[in-house]
Length: 211
Ligand SMILES: C[S@@+](CC[C@H](N)C(=O)[O-])C[C@H]1O[C@@H](n2cnc3c(N)ncnc32)[C@H](O)[C@@H]1O
Image 1: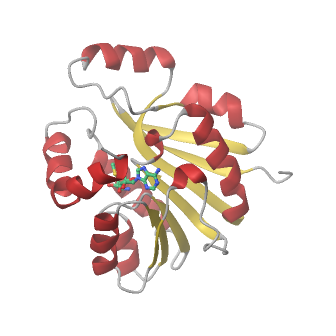
Image 2: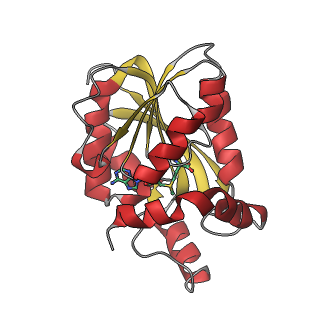
């Protein structure tokens, strides 16, 4: 089955499933709510902003920003997620598109925030780096990319978590290891981060002036 069909099937139960993992602080969604809250609070430091949400899903995060009058553009390849997102955010510009192929050319603007919550782990390391470099072209001068996801500070932290959760570990997801990502993109972005739980956190990328 195509990956996007899996998300179409999951869409109506997604919020509930995430809540169960989140409440028991279990991999993979331990810290989901605090991650999203942290990102919400960062964006809300601006009274108004243009936000691009990549893999917006059921729009848990962006619908709150939408309600607070931020301008929302989003990409997701699941038709059902798009229906749910558009219902919550009628005037948002939501596009059905596969971000593995880059950013759809229907999006021409630049953004104050590009958000990727629990979506970039669907890309391999090389694909992630390629997408993050492409996203430089979609950021305003002081724009930020903010990633909230399952992630680890070091590869050893990831290995320990993988061992601990070996029965339920998803080998088709590729989680960020901050030290590896930082090494690869340090010529493009200044990287800062916050570790939220044993398997989650937030990474903030600020484009370096000369790039
Ligand atoms: C785990 S959900 C996360 C949803 C939301 N951002 C959140 O924080 O709850 C991943 C989302 O990314 C979308 N997605 C995964 N791979 C994608 C791809 N290659 N192109 C576009 N959307 C993708 C899925 O359809 C799904 O809505």
